[in-house]
Length: 198
Image 1 (tube, helix red, strand yellow):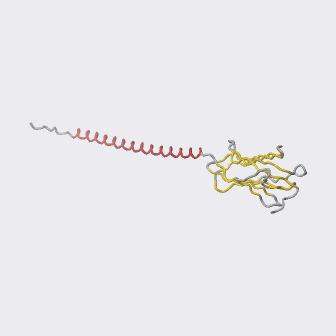
Image 2 (image 1 turned 90 degrees about the vertical axis):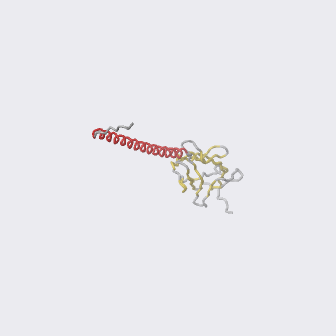
Image 3 (image 1 turned 90 degrees about the horizontal axis):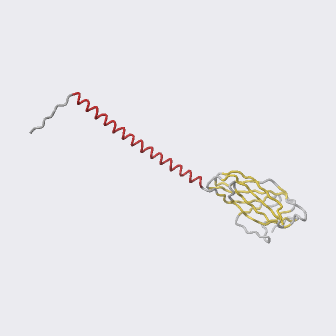
């Protein structure tokens, strides 16, 4: 039995061609949409990774390194205190002459993150009685390899028989979140004259 093939009229052929074109266009649009979706997902993934990196960086605790305290007297060589050091009432770190001019200089480096509201606190006692407390706002500092340097105003050591003797000093450096980066205690004395050079 032979198959009968019905001829397609020109109008039907045109309709079928139109339907095929529409199907092809829909497939092309679907492929483009899928490609656009993949690109958006990749971009979102990149942004998400970048955001996580920024968040991780912001979560790092700031660190203050290499703190050094300088005692500067016009009549004497500069004294430098840096950890670690050993100081006891019988082994003073230095001696100052009464009624002499001096000033303190503080240097340090910052790493990991910005340290905000850094302040320097220096408390001094004599025979257990607090005789001085100095608090200076140093400021906010960004991480960098070069040290920051801050000089305090010049001062004068006390004078007189009651001013001479042994002193205890505690130096602290803390930020606005009360994180302590430096906490050292040392001893020095004030005498009538400068000690003789060795």
